Image 1 (cartoon, rainbow, N blue to C red):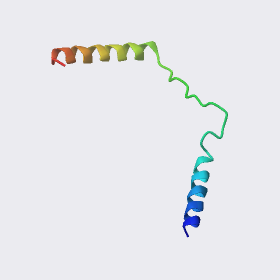
Image 2 (cartoon, rainbow, N blue to C red):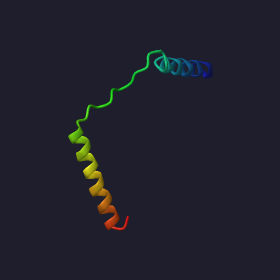
Image 3 (cartoon, one colour):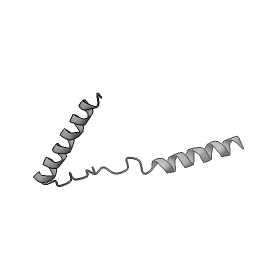
Length: 58
């Protein structure tokens, strides 16, 4: 009985690892396209948040 449980554990472990690293191709998510206006808006929001944090004593 112990042999069966060990064999089953090894079989399940092997089956679950088959998908790990089985592909040699690299997947990279493309960078999101952002306009200059969106970047400037993010910078302004970041500056406001920084000023608020300094003002609040963080």
